[in-house]
Image (cartoon, rainbow, N blue to C red; front, side, top):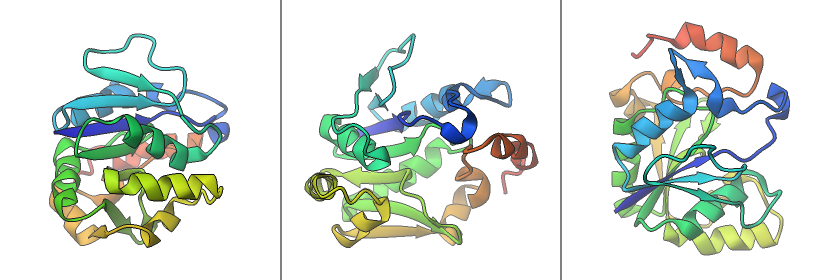
Length: 197
């Protein structure tokens, strides 16, 4: 059994506090696109942080941050603590182009690692990755010490890095891993639309 989590916590200060999951990309909200992709590969879907969806869909559970104000690390810890699956796909709420096949690949690789994480020339992508329960204790220790950089976790667990060349089996890595941090990022999505390879 696999689980998936969408991290919706955070104040989106660079986007004027707007709910980035509600942004529309190619006629669908980012959240609806993510739910469709993740529901195809996971047996349960967790919505982590924020106030929870106004109209939760069947199979979704809202999970509050168990350690507030700890950023993505707190969200990943809360999701892993609540997940029922043997591995958990974690995605940020502002990634419109991730796909089911890519996430299924990351989850499948978790059979041989504690953390499966993409890496491109922009660095690691811990908010489009697969985590197992082996990450729980190291995450708890980092949170307790207020060491909140997600990259630090790579020193604590068995890691399988998925390089850009491997990601290309599923499409253009820049498109698949694109996220919307600012209004300029949102405007720039038009250049990625339709650029699947």
